[in-house]
Image (tube, rainbow, N blue to C red; front, side):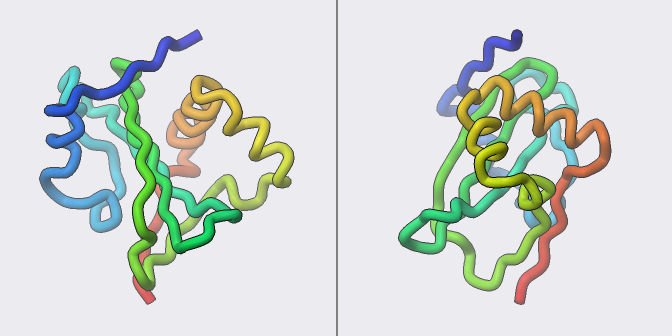
Length: 120
């Protein structure tokens, strides 16, 4: 089982540089290990009181990740390959960070990710 760890503060800062994942949703070079395995997944929690965007950014090579919550950019629409999962299956998947990130990685490898983004 993968032992995920967090990116350092400098690595997180590096993630915010350059083109956004919304403009160019493909893989990136990881600021921690340099491999081109940095991936991202975005979702909106169904029970959020305000428009919220949750992001997961991880490296499939060195197993570092960061998750963030932010205001959902107005008009941003995106595909979500997990949207068709029944709520209980999705909750079970999200209960384990290790399993969730492994599932997202498998979706990348299968071509279901990266997501597509448009603005209304």
